[in-house]
Length: 217
Ligand code: T5A
Ligand code: NA
Image (cartoon, rainbow, N blue to C red):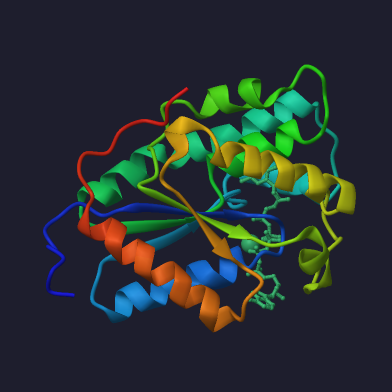
């Protein structure tokens, strides 16, 4: 613990994965662990359904409104851009920001729809320039396991075929050269085991933060 200089900037830690992989549960546990170790930490999530843009996203996800695939895609991205500056500020102030879903979900879910004019490459472009995560924890879970967990199937995108395409696209992102900060976690373990697997790389990452850059093309 004392090895980590508390005057350093905070880290930007993103948690990604399929629906029901346990992202929110793990973000909450990680947040509490870091506070318990006297680190400054914050937990935020995307979509942030509380803003005007977030309310449009929420309505779309619940099936209460229809939007063109590109339009909803850009709203998800705008929902990140509207807090980009406050993320930068928190990190500069030494706060480690834990983010529940980020640009990877943004690109992958839209591209998984199979719209021929909405490739993964196209979907990534509005994300370029957002604060670049220091670490992305990818909670890996088979779609069959995910479907067994509580609440599955209520919102748009929560179908077997969509989740399978999302998983394949997530896995393809792991191979991109600029994504070397991704750490794959076996999310099929117990909640405590997953939490243990997450804490170690996060503490390691917090030790090694240097200057923060933008997400690349
Ligand atoms: N989306 C999102 C886009 O299309 N574009 C974007 O840019 C973004 C940001 C909503 C949808 O929006 C899409 C992706 C999504 O389809 P959301 O609000 O993050 O995104 O979705 P939620 O419904 O809030 O969360 P998830 O479904 O993704 O669930 P989590 O957070 O992964 O899982 P969690 O922690 O809530 O746990 C789910 C259940 O599993 C149990 C929990 O108790 C809970 O019942 N559980 C476990 N059970 C056994 N073993 C474990 N280890 C467990 N961990 C949790
Ligand atoms: Na969640």
